[in-house]
Amino acid sequence: MNVLIVEDEKSLALEIDEFLSREGFTVEHARTRRSAEEKIFVNNYDFILLDLGLPDSDGFDLLKVFKKLPNREDAVIILTARGAIDDRIHGLEEGADDYLPKPFSLNELLARIHAITRRKHKLDSNEINIKGFRINIQNRTVYYNEERINLTKKEFEIFNYLVLNKNRVISRTNLTEHVWGDVLEINSDSNFVDVHVKNLRKKLSQFALVDWFETVRSIGYRINI
Image 1: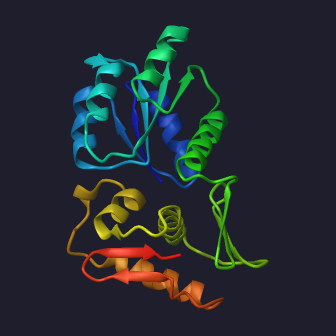
Image 2: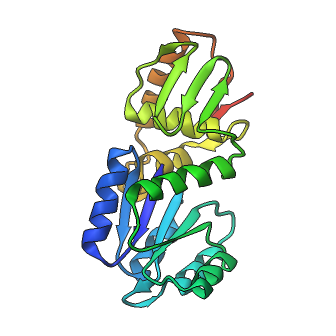
């Protein structure tokens, strides 16, 4: 998943980046409200990790601006040294999905990310079953019955994202944002997304028929269940 860290403390941002990158996330940074707004107005994220003590603004102000943007589903977790209950309540009332006071455990941060993902997609556990395939969003593994399917990191991310959004048409641009990150840094004329999807389909079809994995012409893809 694609994560934006809005944090001016460089060492903490780097620590979170390294941890989430090892867990398979695509991570971007912003150290100020201005740079965060520039990224948020252009890209969609699965998660925004928001510090309240930004050098050029209060994080609550950025949260208010973000929540006014139409058609956004990015989950927001506030990360801050402010531990007062009033601040926590205010953050949740302004639309944050969770509030984690500093200092915090990176494993707890990851657990909260997984919990929000389950809640957002109405999952009872970290495992998704679809047509005999089992996807574990926490362990980042895919099995067909009891046999593991060896997917690359990007192939897993594509499959996971499409399954989480099953029965919805996902555009190539949207898929690129959520799997590769900043869409501005990617050549929009490239067919690299189609190549990865082709390889993913080939691996899945070795185990079962995947006619439910659709290409929507000129738009993108859909898992049609």
